[in-house]
Image 1 (tube, protein in one colour):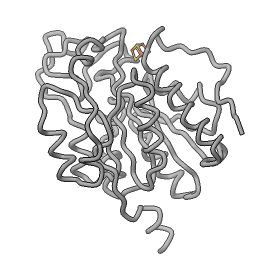
Image 2 (cartoon, rainbow, N blue to C red; image 1 turned 60 degrees about the vertical axis):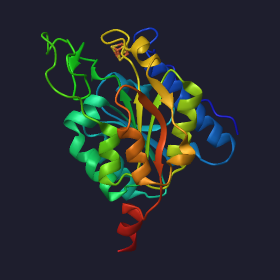
Image 3 (tube, rainbow, N blue to C red; image 1 turned 180 degrees about the vertical axis):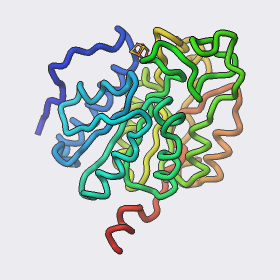
Length: 261
Ligand code: SF4
């Protein structure tokens, strides 16, 4: 059955913002999975946090919950615990997920909670007009770091691999076919899925040219079931940015264990 997930809400992202590409990719995946009878849209719930990304729940016509800054993941785990039959997906910003909400992210990954986390990673706080986040590169000049950030950026992929996430991937919002493939694999994965979606903020930190020269897709045949290989791939390059599914493995989920008690 073909469904239409668009809404009548006016899109207020800056014209050309790659958040729109993530929105279209996610809608496309959900529409395709529903058409193939792999999902019922009434069995899917989406959550989002605070930041430019958070508007996404206004633009997808489905059950959704927009929560507090950094608290996307507790809402998602609560929904999944209450009704394990639901598919629970969520969007966070990098400030949302890696600054305020980092402890929630780490513990949901460690528990293998069966939720799907998509980070719109633009390497700064964009909604508040351009302050450094934990993902901003060293030297980044923004409103809170006018002389350049003196901090090393947080590494979400290595962290997620290290704490036990069972699905870890990175994609680029501008590569919509690649993003659709990774989002679909994350939704189909049973267990905790983490996808870092590189999404340049074209208004406050336009990294598109920088990224184009450095991003490459890994050969996933080498990595997807092997944690050591995944860590080797993401740590072996310093001047390039690997994209792809680094790890896709299974273990019992938090909710399965909870409901077996
Ligand atoms: Fe997109 Fe940046 Fe504009 Fe926010 S401020 S809508 S992230 S381009």
